[in-house]
View 1 (spheres, rainbow, N blue to C red):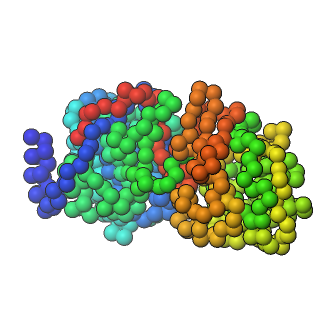
View 2: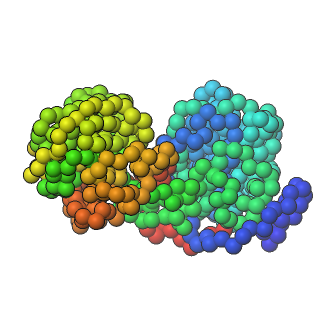
View 3: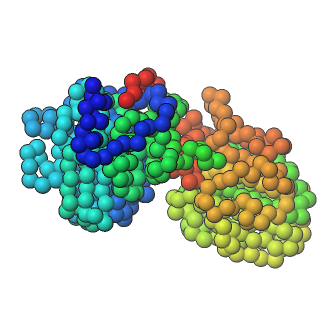
Amino acid sequence: MRQKKRLMLWRGEGVTPTPPTPFDNTYSLDFDGVDDYVDCGSFTPLDGGTALTISGWFKSGTYTTAGVLISLNLHFDIYQGSAAAVNTKGRFTYRLRGTYGNSFKTLGGVEVPPPGTGAGDLCDGDWHHICFVWDDSTTTAIIYEDGVAVITDTSTTGTLNSATGNLYIGEGLFAGASVIQGNIDEVAIWDTALSPTDVATISAAPTNLTSLNPVAWYRMGDSGTFFNGNWELKNQPQLNNWSSHSMEFDGVDDLINFGNWQLLDGASACTISFWIKSGVDASNAYVIARVESTAQFTIFQAGTSTSIKYRLYTGTHYTIQGGAVLDNEWHHCMMVYNGSTLEVFEDGVSVGSTAVTGTLPVSTSELRVASYAGGSPFKSGNIDDIAIFDSAKAIGDIWDGSGSPTDLTGESGLVGYWRMGEDATWDGSDWTIPDASTNSNDGTSSGMAIDDKVNNAPDNINQGLSSGMVEGDRVTDVP
């Protein structure tokens, strides 16, 4: 009956929804109202924006004072007000933050219920769809509940804050505060204002949103993987990325050891490629190295600066210092020796070259990630997709300009390839990092924990991670 009523209201609004195509929606996540929430990390797609759409499904029979459905604290809030206020009980409040100073603009004019408060009691034990649309070009913000425009504000203008905050589902500004009780499903965000027709379509039933190009889309239970006591929620627009996980190093004692790795012995050319997301550590902390001073190559932090040094040894040390890549953002780094020149690329751009002669020596030292001989100094941060070739690769063979790792298994000259998070296995005390080349030189971690495999990788950010939730919080109750 509720669905039929919704369709009648759509007709009253003059919008005919497009019938949804069949779509497999099996699970939602159940939030307990005590400590359950999902943290989607530092979220930048809306920074400085002039439009947005927020969409999600919610079901609850219990009202939670100040319970937050979705929040990006520097940009918007959708939350429940005080249960003691009769005229707001069961309703959501919608707030937008941008060029309005340090406070939020609560949408709507002077009215009862208070401005920005939705029209209906959405804590009635049924599933409801909520959608918040704003477009500065028309100075209009519209709140839709179950496909009906319940608030239209035509004086909402400005830009969103450029300062980045974390995106939360099920709670607000402070992790673990303002938690909500109920089921949440199919949360999606756009950096554009969806049309009334599009809103009508996505309000009819959960549907495939791919063609509408959301910047983030969390299918909650349907995309979730329970790992190490938490739900990992995939961001659907990044679902098919080559890399979804990386390894995170603490800078204290974490490392990966590939043993006495000798596939560059006597080589007259080589390429070392990797991705890194890190800040600055103790002086000369090592990223990737053969663990002796005369062993082929070492890649390490340049003193305590934000740059990396790339060093090749052919009987003489040749060194190139790169740019400021240790800024806690993902960067691709690559050093190439072609037999006469050593050149370094960062994010696809050459940052230096020098003439080199000779071949790489035979070495009996270990190949390590995040440490050097004797261990210290250790490198902190995330490292991903390490590839080593016994030939000189062109930058275009490795870097496609997308800011995302690509499949290198078909590249010629590949002698070592460690995707880090992908296919890594935990034996209860250490990680095994498989070699995706044909040489099967797997790495073994030391000092690392099970949670050092993280769902964060280049161009695969804003993956959701639950807190306080258990495996049983994925339920078959869906819209």
